[in-house]
Image: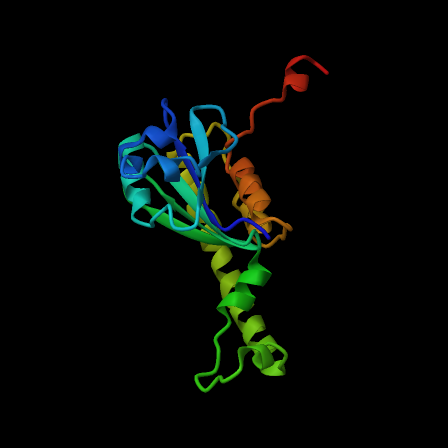
Length: 200
């Protein structure tokens, strides 16, 4: 079974879990929050299980940190919806693992009685293709908005929208890996490994 929950990416000189908005979390809940890979410049990742993070937390986190932040809502590691917000309120969203998202979001008939039977019909596959085309048409705008967000975050490398578009159309077994790749492409480099620093 894959991971379901939220991956929160933000910048702070202090541990992110010390942000005031997490003060209401009990010690038991805080113990379930995992710290992910940090990136240069104070960028940190927190992994919240389902039910721990709320959508309204993102504006609070941006206000506290004074920097853009984003969160990936992951479903069973199969797909993720990424939402980014900058310090002046500009917001963007993008789906990761688009084909799976299209299957999930495909419009069902109003008179649907048995979902399992519906999943094996030509009508379902047509609905998936239609939704996939809709989502694909949004990718250029999503990618451009993500690049603007990264620029507001002060990344040292200017991301290329075409590369972001390609990534948003790609597939990974684990949506979390695709989220890490998206952060790479947006100009948030991973720390160099000890081997690289040692010249190994």
